[in-house]
Length: 295
Image 1 (tube, rainbow, N blue to C red):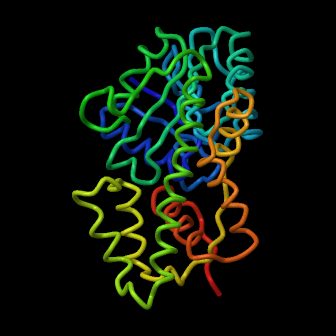
Image 2 (image 1 turned 120 degrees about the vertical axis):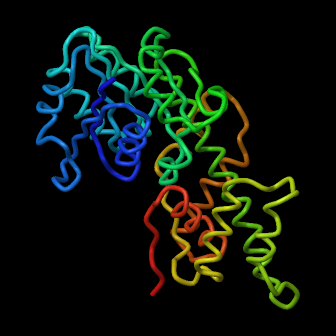
Image 3 (image 1 turned 60 degrees about the vertical axis):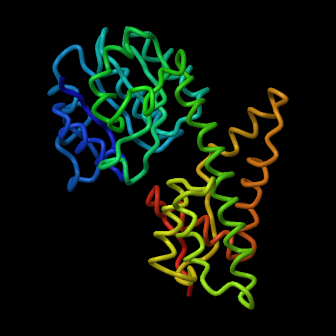
C-alpha cells in the first residue's frame, strides 16, 4: 500500500515514520522544504498509485478546508481522503460533501498519542463508510498501538463520528489534567508539611487508582523541573474543550468537570498559578505544545 500525507509537523512526521516502519510506502508533502518528499500537493497526487489514499494532517479550520478544496480539484473518482487533524466534526460533513461531488471518498480520523505516537502507537477514532474504513485498515493497523485492535482503534460511526469521539476524548483529557494540576498546587502549598511533591506523584504510579499515562508524564515533567519554575502558568486551548461544552449544552448533558477545566485555562491567562504550570507542563510532555518560558 502507498499513502500520501499532507502535513509533516510533530504528528505527521512521526506518522510517516511509523507507517514506513510498518511496511507502508509513504510520500509526504509539507511546505517546509526540509521535511517534504515532494515539491507540491499536485506532485504528491501524481506519484500516488490509483486509487489514491491521502491523509491530511494539518491544523484544523481554514487550513484543512483549503487543503481539502485543493484535493477536490486534483483527485479522481474512487480516491480516498482521510482527515486526521483535530477538525470540528461539523466540518466533516462539508468536506465529505465537497469531495463527493467528484466521487472522492472521505474518512475522518481522531488521532491521539501526541509526540509519543511514533514509539507507542496512535489511538484512532474513525468515522466513515465501512467499506472505506476497511480499505484503509492496513494504514490504521500500522499506526495503532500493538495489541488487540479494539484497544487502540474504533470505527465510531459514519462521517463525523471519529472527530466527535476525539472531541469528547479531549474534553475528558482537559478534566484529567486539571485534577492532577490542582492536586499538585495543593501539595505544593503545604511546604510546611510536604517535603517531596515530585516524590508523591512518583509514588502514585504503581498500585493506586489514580495511576495513568498522564500521571507518568507529570512525573517526567517534575523530574526535569521539580518546581516548574522554568515555565509560566499560561495554558492555551486548541478548541476541542469548547466544542465539547457547546455540544453538551446543545444536548442538555451536564459536564461540570470539563467546563471547570476549560474555564481554568482562561484563568491561567490572567494570573500565574502553580496548577496551570502543571497543566502547561503536561501539554508540553504529551503533545509537544509550546509553553511560555518564565522570565
